[in-house]
Amino acid sequence: MGRPHTEFIQTQALNWRAIGEKSTRPGAQVKRLSVDPDSRACTVLLRHPKGWSFDEEHYLDDDEEIFVLSGALTIGDVTYSKGDYAYLPAGYPRPHMSAPDGADVLTYLEGEHKRIAGKAPEGGFDASTLVERISTEQVAWGGATDPNVASAGVRRLALRNNPKTGDTTWLLDIDETGMGDEVNRLETHPVVEEVFILSGEMHMPQGVLKQGAYFWRPPDIPHGPVGTKTGSLGIFRCKGGPLTTDWSEETYPVQWNAPYNPELPEDVREALAGSYDESLPY
Ligand SMILES: [Fe+2]
Image (cartoon, rainbow, N blue to C red; front, side, top):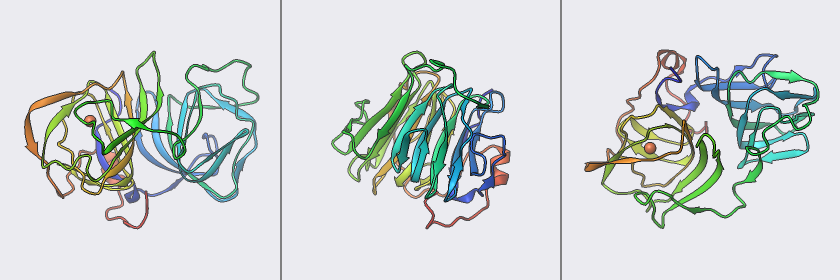
């Protein structure tokens, strides 16, 4: 069945909740953005309060992918600061973790992501999928890979690409010239597209995605057109294979400032706290 279509939420409208002691981050707080009811895979925001630490040596039985939104999180000998990305496969060793000044981290967890106490088995993780750290604010970016999107105003930074599954994660930075067309085509992908907006605005028929907006869109759903006049930076993932795009023949007007009209599962609709504080980033 997979995760339900969730397009879109402003994550500011969700409440932070205490996370369980048996979780991957005892003592942290969580906002659940989407959850697979079968596999338990999920996308969450994790808030590690100032002074947070977890000193019990452990590893997880599933993959974890992180992008630091603010503060800094240390896992073993590696410290992840704002804008840092990592893909840590199941079995990656975690001798200790800490966030002395606190850290907010966008986190993607596969499977049941159980915490297993003790030293990780030697060679017990798939090194071919490990991305130990990318400091995204310090590396060179490329252009968009889709010729329908490519322009001088669009930059793309690949973060990972699993050659076996085709699952990919990237940052896409569109400046105010990159997608300001008044008309555009609809797009459809054969895979899940998942996006979290880091800054700027994206205008879609479901409303205006601002900083902190999130969506999980199952495969084969035509979407768009998309436009931005402010520019927009987002972290994108595709799941279920590489992202290819079917573009519609016809063009449609971009719906600037469309009223909020989301597609949401019932439990997410209930969890939304209603209006939200626009001064918060997420
Ligand atoms: Fe898309």
